[in-house]
Length: 459
Ligand code: PFF
Image (cartoon, rainbow, N blue to C red; front, side, top):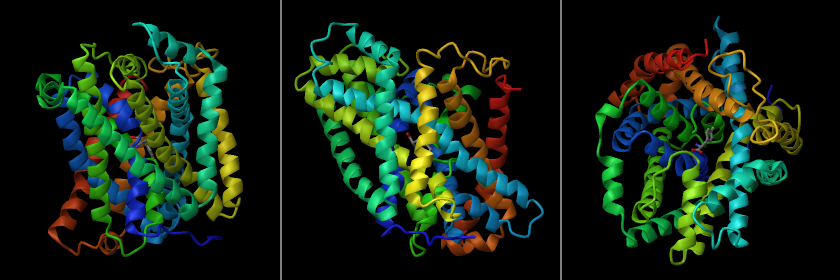
């Protein structure tokens, strides 16, 4: 079926930068700190770390293995690895499901990526300077109420992403992450250093690591798992497709640990960049998206060199977003190209236009279409507009489902020999341990979480 020989990453390091770029995104810098805030701090952080180690690393290994085994795009990987099995049609469906999910995610992610680009522009042009208390709320609300602004900046994020993708793996993705990722780390570390000089570190440490176990319940478990899967780019074909470009001699277990470590490090460090600023300024840890777009700009406006740090902060968010949007865009393009349906450039254009339409609907659901609740017949979904629905169904629901499919597929359906050869761990206790996790631990727990997710009223 394959019409095109797939390009490969030029090295393990190139892959690592791209995969870390995918994992590190709005989920780490924008979402992680406020989800920690909403869930009471320490207990949530520890739960999150536990989930990354127990499920996260084994699942990243699983998805990379499925992707690299035949070095083909996700749908073809599922098709070929289930060759000769009675259940093959189901696994082909699983392949489709995993490729469609990132498109749903991009439907809302592009809009938020647009906010970050808009904020870089706002701060550069002084629109966030000399604000009185409360003004930043108005600035944010104005942006949300303006279809033109939202669509303009969203369009820019779609164009940048589609352009990078259209250039291919080495000239596009690799080049972009080679430039953006080092800048991202430099900016992040400078922000933490700045925060450290300004105090609030001890308070932050206490907030992030003192567990109050009473705060843990089914809902926090679901939330922490969802956050970990989202942050590690699981269940969305990204790791499958990035894995398919990974040269055979590179060790998958090492790469998986590298990605999980870097991703978690950035999430925690983002907390250490943001919380001290909030604590030392005596601000309320107001939760939700307002933390980054309303609270931080007030503080950047007041503190010494705040403007410079504000620009750095929103650039950091924008870079992190773009290295993630490219990874969400690639699976669909890679499948279309491989099937000879379109060249890479045409595929980038077609997928870009389709996603632009979806993201435009999302952007409009923040203002003119805010009262349109397409799935109002369901009691859980009745108050959700398009953007909420995309986030809820793709990022919360489908990612869990796809990750479960991947674990069952490699654990129970595909011949053991395939993963034994691909992981390069030999028939060691580590290999057996990994396999037991994906066979016996992931399915019941993630399955339970999915049932629970559905139980919140979906059915
Ligand atoms: N991991 C990204 C973040 O934390 O923002 C989001 C993401 C990227 C999710 C790629 C899924 C994915 F396939």
